Length: 221
Image (cartoon, rainbow, N blue to C red):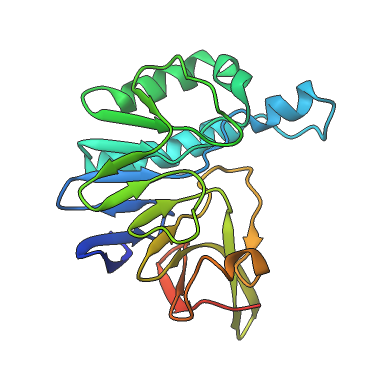
């Protein structure tokens, strides 16, 4: 398991290279911004036509992690679907795969700005979730502590001999973690964007995802 382990309010967490967050002690897996159904939503609203394969790719990667880690609980940090109608556009095989992943474990859907309504796929639907000292929500709140969120799809770049490498990343400091987007068709916001300045301390690190979890000082605006 390739990851970067750190402490948040005395809780040991691991930012996995896959873009998932793992709490070993609780066997709790956290994922953010699946954005299932994005290609369907764009087609319905007259946007760019994208190949309709993102659900399968996203769910396959999530299933691989669940098979490897066998979590007791899974928390989806919001924007699990690209809009409310996305859950109804799942192909039968995608619906079946998601149902299999959910079976036998606690599954929590948190509200996002793209999917504020309840889902019809089982599990528990909440606006935010607190357990121990940690609070899980979709969008970070200024001044919060021990907070785990998503929403911003952070990305960071690293200069390599072959050129600059840009990857989705975690942003981590003493107060919070912001997860990268896990969905196949999600874009990203560079972590030197001013929106992160009031949220992340000067000691924050960016952990790039990919074949390994690569920590570096968070680039600033």
